[in-house]
Image 1: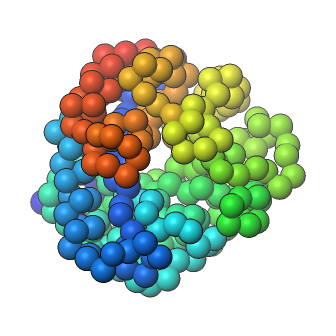
Image 2: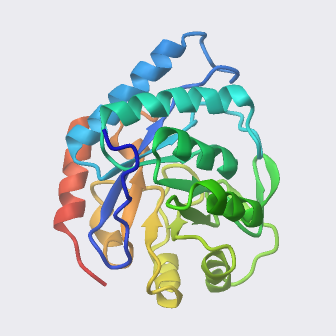
Amino acid sequence: MTRFVELPLTAGGPKLLIGLVHLRPLPGAPRHDGHFDGVIEAALADARAWQEGGADALCIENYGDVPFWRNAVPPETVAGMAAIGSEIRRMTSMPLGFNVLRNDPRAALALCVACGGSFLRVNVLANAAVTDQGVMEGEAASLLRDRSRFAAGVRILADLRVKHSLPLAPRPLEEEALDLVERALADGIILTGPRTGTEASPEEIDRVRRVLPQTPILVGSGITEKNCFGYLAASDGVLVGSSVKACGIESPVDPQKVERLARILHAGFHPH
């Protein structure tokens, strides 16, 4: 088994479908039911569905742990995600990533090292945002130094004005995007709608593409079979979770829905 699998993400390259593995509530979370084996089994089932449907990569996130910690999560959360990530790594050779909600990128980086992950998603890498957890401040300086020390190959995908938030001091979108790449050293940019499952703005994606033509740009919310093609020209891939569930956000991933979405995404590849 190959533990580290490179994420094949490039600006202007083939479009990537990154499937989100939404974990059920982990030990310590208010809604955890006391049955961790069930959390693992559900995660493995969703990972298999993504793989069978033709996704290109997986991103594991502790979606069920509401209400989320603002920054550092407790050790039981990291331990639970590590156990699940290791099981998924044994099951598949797909590129694997982590997003530790709400904003604990150093834990996500450590999970990549422990579980063979190749990328992490960071909701607030730089600047400051007002969120439902309060004010969050990016900590790119410590994260990038940790990566240099023990995880040099791991890529950082940073949200730009992440969903469920507003900038503390708004600036032009283009300036924020440039700072994420040039000063916070993000390897890729993610744009979302205002809430989970809502569509991102095609106009904002076009604006970011114009100032960052060589940086991978992904759409991080609201992608469906019906609207997917409209996002392909200016973006390099999508992160999808809710639209491929069988019957609602907390239901299992439907491999047939994944297959239909993957077919559209991969057939609609248009280099920009």
